[in-house]
Length: 367
Image (cartoon, rainbow, N blue to C red):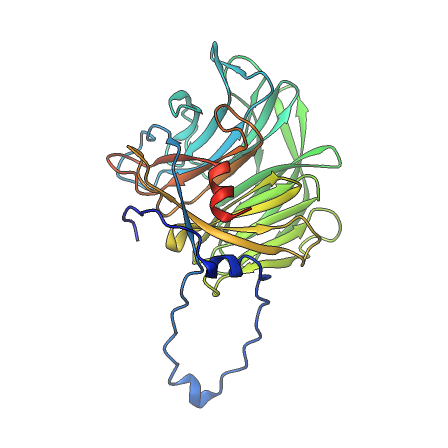
């Protein structure tokens, strides 16, 4: 499963699969006592057709060696580029080392800054003014660590939100009706939404809603435009929650079991492309990424296809991805957009993050 992958072309079967809607969840009949004593052997579900896309670049490895350390990235850019640490950059990438802290990388993959903040798991950000506000799930201090980049200089701590969850795990940010929110997901699936507000000592957070997914969950992403929250339940699938209205109402977008997602379901992210909003999900169990068109209302999501990230030149193939992020539109040499994914097995070193040109993914999927 972790070997390097060769190139292939989109098959006719893949094209047909891309045109069918997601399979509706099936109801399972109760099992009688007699049949329960002799369970049937599960029949493996073949993976859905999957295309391959070459990696375009990679970051340097995180410092933590011989461990599951690199976890989740977040991408940011602005028109005219970024003045970070005294140098001009077309964009920057944040990436967590969940054993040690938070990195800032350039698009060339070099490390620009490291904040030794401890056990940070997932990271996300939202633009604000000339810069951005970022947050991360903090398993050391048990809450949400917040950071700010003001447009020049470096990333700096900017507050902390204490939480009552058992273990902070997944994290994402959004803007709903103009207000900045943070979504924290505990490892057991408990969810806390916080409204963030600036203060003299940094941002503070006030709980706005709470509910439970049901089991271990992590990856999440907010669609600011539609007010939807997507959460990956690792052994179940991907849920769509409205961020307005009653807490906890939801629609199942994609379910494990039809070959499109192979447990664990991990990172989720959105990219807008040619009038569509596309959801990318890490199918960690077979080192692939599944894509849905979520432009419509809840329940109308359409499966698009799957891809893997293949080796290219000195950059090795992507295996066992945890977190990922996508940037809509031009950023540096990536004229149509950029996808950044965590790589579990990085040949020759500790874990790192791989960069993938969205234009190549789009072409491979026939979008």
